[in-house]
Amino acid sequence: MDNKKTFVLVHGAWVGGWCWDPIVNILTSLGHTVYAPTMPGLGDEDPNEKKAITLSDHVNSIVKLIKNQNLSDIILVAHSYGGAVITGVADRMKDYISKLVYIDAFILQNGQSVLSLNKDEDQVAIVKQAKENNGTVPPVFGPQDLGAIGPEVGQALMTKMRFQPLNTFVQQLGLANEVGNNLPLTYIAFDQPELVQIKPFVEYVRNKAEWKFYSIKAGHMGIMTHPSFVADLLLAE
Image (cartoon, rainbow, N blue to C red; front, side, top):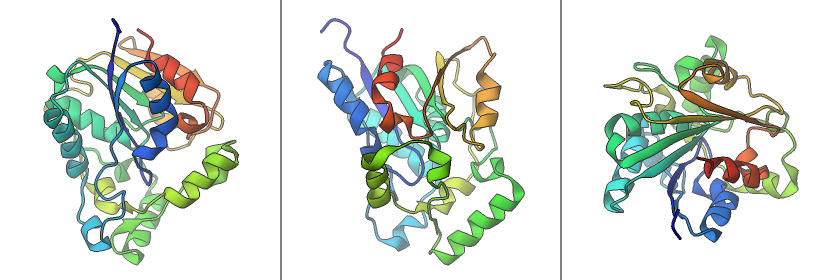
């Protein structure tokens, strides 16, 4: 295949690499190489191990994957919380990456944390939940936040989601370069409904010349409910 691409897909909070399965199936069926790892703390690790995991651990896990698999010319893709992770990866691994794609994702600036971008009352609630759950946070999004997900996706989320280590939300992202590190940037937004936590990032990139911007009529888990639409955009030049 002359135009074979390599994708690394980084999942969001509370889920694992499995949330990319519909898109992985499409891309691999077309001959592309795809990695969709589950980051530390989002599998079935011991609860006492989970609570120590940080944002840096997630960034390092993707850096390690790229190095161990000897990858290059990567299209690095993130959904939701994963945006914080790929921003950190791109800051260190620019020469391995051809493009960054943020899908309904957080965009952290230097010194910001995921928690700091939430409302004050939400920050307090998240920390309280973590204290009650051994340093981990239960999923905070309900069906009303995710739009029409259908029974199959709903069942997958219900049975496979895991508590998120609080430290991945609390740790600040340290960057040596501007966000994106001068790589080509794409943002794909989901707007039915538009998630309140994501809206500021959509507004931030929508009219910026350095960003390609797309919108899909889907809820926040559009990577599972509308995989064909997402895959088409991932393959767009």
